[in-house]
Image 1 (cartoon, rainbow, N blue to C red):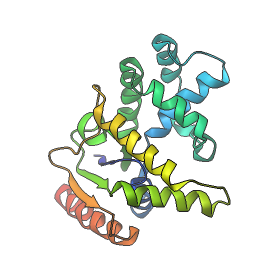
Image 2 (tube, one colour):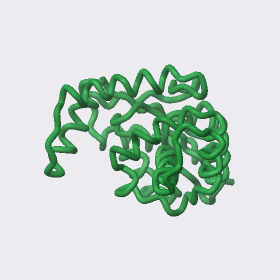
Image 3 (cartoon, rainbow, N blue to C red):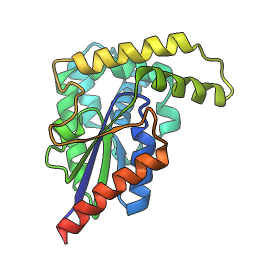
Image 4 (tube, helix red, strand yellow):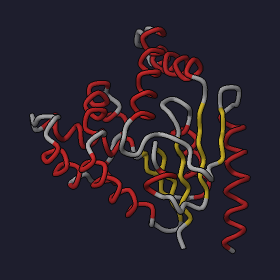
Length: 212
């Protein structure tokens, strides 16, 4: 029986790093569900198709291949902006949620991170984590990441973008970002990634023991 770990939280809270670390530790399959929306958006952009046609976007979403998601390509800002436009479309969300649920059944276990994993995609996940941090800390992390990669960044603009993203994610009618009722909260504002990993590991180990 597959063990599914659902990890949700706002942008730049550290859930992606934590999810990849957990997947590597346990030999589980990992899916950054945000990349599925970005892959759909990239397919639309590459084909020169409109971003406001839900039927067309749904068709592209149904064709996304989850095993071929390239983070380095899909992290482009333009793709992210396009993804935010199609992510609010119910038909697109339904198509991608079904694909994500199918992925979650892979043996021996899966780690899915996103914004509605514990609440919508995998409500029966064995372990649910909600990883968060203050907007100021998340903006600083994003700023440091950009500067660390040799690019120029504007902290004020990044902070404003983080707040707008939160409002959009938490305010949407379909699958808003929120912790599942039974999710374990990990606030990484003052926590190192190693401390967050150890906290998550203790919860996952307890879930694994229950399954034995």
